[in-house]
Length: 339
Ligand code: AMP
Ligand code: MG
Image (cartoon, rainbow, N blue to C red):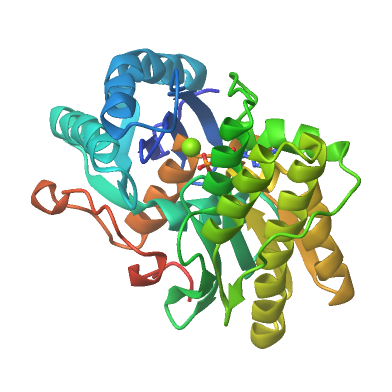
């Protein structure tokens, strides 16, 4: 990739949870680099302080690799974007500190990006979706949203844990292992392929919101009863939780009459979920779009691209306003780039 003096290159830093990611985008959304490294706990779930320590340790290596891949130097950058929230405090603060230091040292503007907005924007950039109903399902979030009157409105969300978290906790309890390149949700998906029997589990949709914690407790109870094949349990969990989010997505679609559905976030990689959502799209004669897997899970490219969208619309984040926002909701963010 050749650098051009007319281009603005934005470097995006993602560090909301277990992934430390760096992406570089030009102002047209060409992604020149997108590299990340995941913190994999030895036992149990994500420990925020340990994950933050991981991010600090790998940061300079990931940054260097991103510059080499993009074939640009730090001095070629025009903008630094970082995920300002929502997420885990210590992890967010590590990324924010690096972003502030780089912007200050290079004398260029800083933009704080909402992580959930970034998942939607990278989905739109990398697919044909223009104005979609989005199902965003990841390790930390479960949101059905669509744009209306200046903001991405939330039509439905989880009342407790995120869908990806539900899959991860069950998978860990069942002894499945998180390996590099094969997250726990993907390991559970592999098991589910050989499932045949649908076991009854709590299916909880309240209005437009969903709840997974009761199903998770029930599934773990069933696991410890040793009466069922693990394949059948994994299959039944998937059928239930995916049907719950599909139901809400379908209702949001019929209400908004949008012409696209976008599936994004780490769980978007799941083939069974893709099938369910694409069959809804077919039933309603709308387009189904799913973000390519490189951009589905948490990544720096989505932060870089969303930072550019914001910057081109006059948004910058002064250092004194750059403190992280652990509970920054999608529907609190103004989206001036959609007219
Ligand atoms: P993110 O939070 O966007 O980085 O996504 C990570 C989440 O996606 C974790 O909960 C993973 O277990 C989940 N995940 C990744 N691949 C799959 C898959 N193939 N099926 C289900 N969940 C997955
Ligand atoms: Mg992640």
